[in-house]
Image 1 (cartoon, rainbow, N blue to C red):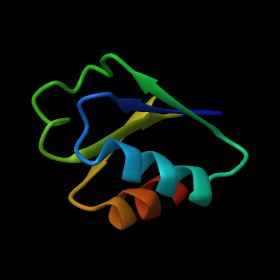
Image 2: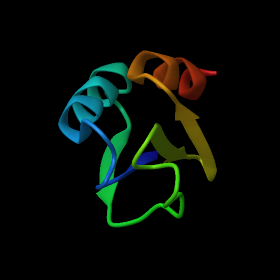
Image 3: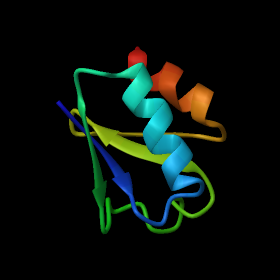
Image 4: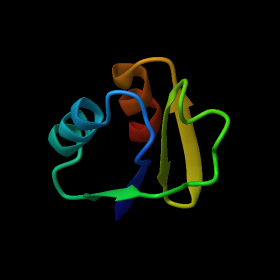
Length: 67
């Protein structure tokens, strides 16, 4: 499956590395926009399986996606 990240996300490189480690079989894709414009600059947001997940930290985001 694809995990999509907005290119304007804070700490983009760190987020991409942590997601790659947490989900080695999934593809991490950096998109121009994931339709979360007001939130993506302030929080960590990803799209996975047609759902949007957001959290204040990378570890909390990974836990939400794992569920």
